[in-house]
Structure formats: structure tokens, C-alpha cells
Length: 272
Image (cartoon, rainbow, N blue to C red; front, side):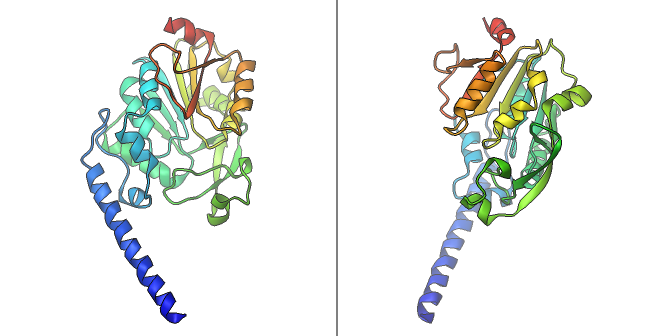
């Protein structure tokens, strides 16, 4: 029995060495990459913690969400990135808009977001270390070190694996309505593109943004979809008179399996 345990330890140690070596090679490789005018992303700790890093894939490949967002925005528009993580979409889209407001509540991801803004010397991004939800409060959120799938606990089953293994953080949450009233002051003459990627917390974010979304500004929302939240999201957006855009039918779009797009009439008239 002791021999078996020793053998398993040797194997696990060998696997760890291989994993770390691969991570270092990937980090060095990524440091020389450039995509959409962005020099490099992440840091050694972040990249080394993932065998398969979705943020890196999104950065290096021709991601349909980024392709579509680049076609939607314009130099005088405002981009709001809710659930920015380390800032891949924020960084790329910042090159094509007037200003970006980038929200990331998890401190480890937020640190990387700020670092990426700094090393790329981008001046038009406002990074905000807070969550957006349906009311101003504290939210309990999973705290996966340098993670890309952190979730607000109350929108998930506590018994699932991601909530069993990791501790939680208490983070400050505001509403988009409240922020616009006291801080953003966005006017109707600005085209606004919003990306929401909050791991099934999208409906809470939208409930806290009703007044904002009823403005006469041209607004388009790109949000993550999954089977559990898809129909409630469609019903909510229809109640606000937003139209769902099938990306493969909308002019200039490519098909995006991960997200749904909704636009109000002011945005659609402007795109014609």
C-alpha cells in the first residue's frame, strides 16, 4: 500500500512538472502575440493556472463575438463590458469606441484587467471593481483563483462542484440605473453597446437596468445564453420592446453560438 502511494506521488509530481512547463511555454509564446492591436494579455500566474484557457483562445482566434462587436460599434459609441474578466473584449473593442466601462467584481481577475490596460497603454477604459445586479447590495461570489468561470452564488445550486471546492467573496453590487444616474450620465445621442457575461446572472443585471434600457438612445445588448436562462431573457427583452437579432440573418454579422443579441428600434433605424 505504501509503495502504491509513493508511486502515485511520483506520477502526480511528474504531471505537475509537465503542466507547469507547458504553462511557462504558453506564457512566453503569448507574450509575443498581437491581436487586434493588443500587445499581450494576462500574466504568468493566470495563464499557468489553466490547461485550457478560454481567454487566450478568445484572444488569439477569430472569435465571432469580437467580430460582431467590432462591426456594431463606432468611434463615438460607448461600450459597457459587464463581466469583463481579464479584459480581452474590453481591450480589443476599446480601439473602436469613444469610451469603455469595464466591470469585474473578482479581485484576481480585476488585477489582471488593470494590468492589461496598463501594459497596452490604453487611456479610454474605466475599470470598475464591482458587480452589477438588480439592487445595490453585497453579493456572494465564488473565488476561484485567477478563474474565468466565477459565479454569483445565489443564481446557482450550492451543491454543485464549483461551489463546493472554493471559498466565496463578498463583493459590492450596484445597478446600471443607479450608476447612470449618479456617475455615467450617458445621453441619448450616444450609441451604447452592452456585453453581459455573468454566468447566468444576466437577468438580475437587466432588472437593475430597466430605466437605462428605456432611454431613447440606440442600444444593443450582447449577452451569454444557456438553456436555463435563454427563454426568460428573451421574454424580458421583448417586454422592453427590444428585438432579438439572429446573427446569421443580420447584415454583416457572423453566426455566434454563445450569445444572443437584442437591439431597440433606435439602434435598428441607425443601422439601416
